[in-house]
Amino acid sequence: MAQGDDHEADHGEHEARGGRTRRSNPALTSRAAILAVVMCAIALSLAYPVREYIAQRKEIADLRRQEAVSRRHVEILAQRKQQLGDKSYIEREATRRLHYCRPDVKCYSVLDGGEGDGQQSRRGGTESRPPWYETLWRSVEAADRPR
Image (cartoon, rainbow, N blue to C red; front, top):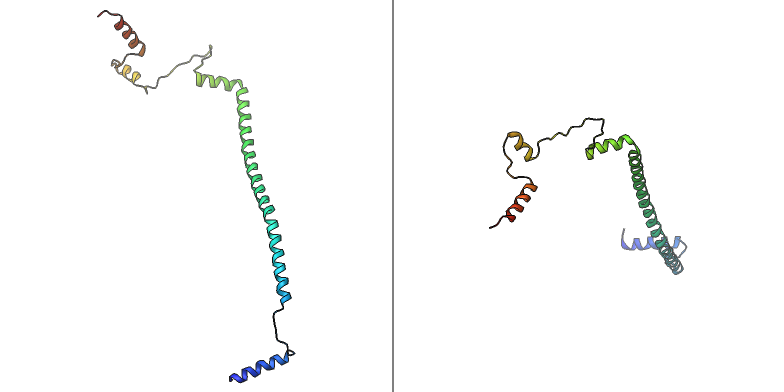
């Protein structure tokens, strides 16, 4: 097809549509602009409340986690209170921690030999350092002697 044929075909379509050319309607664009402004205003007016809502939901979730932790802590303390109210538990703890021995029970203290003093005395060797009170007494006696 030649260029003139294209122009004639376009002209024929133009006449088939009723002779009107399609131009943009200025009222439609102004309506679209107003709609866009209204949508932006709605979005901006909702942005702050939505942000506050999300922040409050996060705060509520954090408070629920803290509440769960606090409840667990209260349960642990209630169990501890119940233990401390039990006489047999108190006696076991006094025996274990304070080396308390009831009068009707024969108790023994076992030295495990982990310290240097116990190992040297078992081997039959003499201690390299005397106890602190002997050192103190010797220093008092040395200070009392005339020079």
